[in-house]
Length: 545
Image 1 (spheres, rainbow, N blue to C red):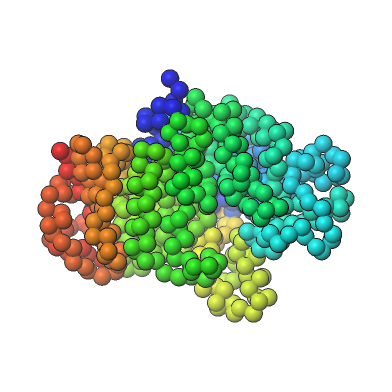
Image 2 (cartoon, rainbow, N blue to C red):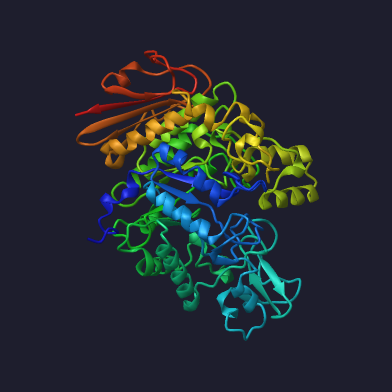
């Protein structure tokens, strides 16, 4: 049977996927940078969480201009992380534990040090020249006003060719020309090579941008996008049990139904980000910080729950390597850190979709605050330069970075209370969050009511209860700005979640929960108070019909 078509039984629908940012996960050689042997050493820990797959951010050969998202060789491992032999051991050891390894694949662009681009920039006549996106122009006068995500023009002049190449991200990340069939064939062959090595799936970085149309200023959702994705699926993914997730900042429920069509013609699921930008001021860059309106979050989650039910599949996440820690962002990383960390988990894990658990999230890790010259992320470094040039004070720049900077999610994993949180015996590439003595895996593994053990119970619940897989979604008390409550309803069961998003005790109608069944999970150790939700309290009830 074609597993891609037998979509209801796909293993990833009841699974939770753990994300590793390898640079910050576990270092075994003392150079201050995480590595593949470090990941191997923590596979038993990962297995205890109950996850079925691990998505690892890029470890391919790379100049590391954008921490590995600038790939110079897709079929080799960067010495920073180890060797290809290490990678084969990781794939084998993970498989022995029933864990699939999901490769983070960047198909929109390569490094400017990739062999393809080194050839492409030699001359317009080079056979590889058309593998990238070029336009004529004059030095100092780019073809149009397209801007890079990381700041400045998206065009870079190459003297040898007397042309500009397109880079939607760093100047060292030239965009591939997917309109050239040779490019597509080379990428499909490379993907198949990784499948043959034992990869269990792929997370496809900014996949909605591969069919860009720069002359029309179109970066995402170009005309040929879904044609290309279907071709890729047909060549590599269909008829397998691979899990494939596309990062698509442009996704809407309508396009997500294409991305994750149950017929398996494109991908397993989509990463969409509508909920993640809700605290962004309208029409302003992400750095100009607003606040979250809870009814907006309910509206967005509800929309995706309703519109993909039975016709597509969504990913569920609060955190990843590109966003700040949710407990600091919308919760309380002080007095109620553990309660708010568990609350966010409970709300998310009762929804339909596949949850992604980012390293340290299971511990309730928090944002941190560095001096302005201690940040390492290219996006943040560019922001500092641009805003200083525009006259912003360092104080205002830091306020934005503290709230939204990507390094918030990239601080080293906090394993124990020893030096550098047990991450490295050397000097860490990015400073460890100073709160590691209080927040670490060793302490939480031993404590029954820890954030980590709350995640374990939630993951086990998701695997056990069919209503989470296919139940319908109903909002409760939608207009409340302090409480998020919903039901998931199937023929056999009703799951009810009620959560207080504030640091205050709030009233909650007792009658809403009178017929909700058994309290399966809560984030307070003692019994709930009838008619009240305590600060950041979350409860999950289950009633079997």
